[in-house]
Length: 104
DNA sequence: TGCCTGACATCGG
DNA sequence: GCCGATGCCAGGC
Image (tube, rainbow, N blue to C red; front, side, top):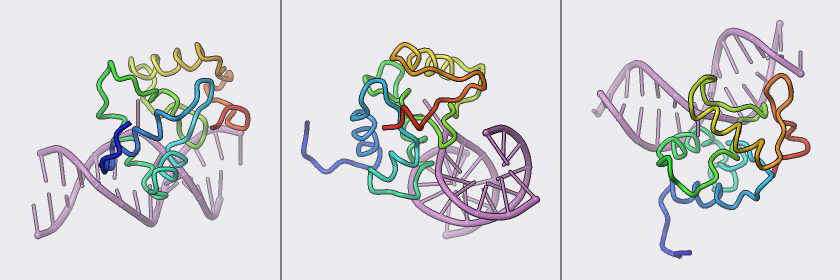
């Protein structure tokens, strides 16, 4: 827990790291908590720059429709879905998560 | 320096 | 409730 002034990405990563297991947050939600209400897309870029072995739970971040934004068929997409199901977050038949119950 | 793109959100049909 | 179009902000070329 450093208290130096974090960059944009660092602030985003800090918020994402705070998402509890078994819960998910939307890009817009994370952006807002980071102090950048209209920068949902920035969140995506920040996550995109993360290494595969990061300890940051990036998989707990989904779009406003409760759906994974990554292209279906990509390895990252599958990894995200698998991790969420492992944490107890179920996907509906249409491939979406019930944010009403699992949103942070 | 300036245009194009993107792990999104929101509005209207 | 899903789909398409438009708006925002930063990075990359």
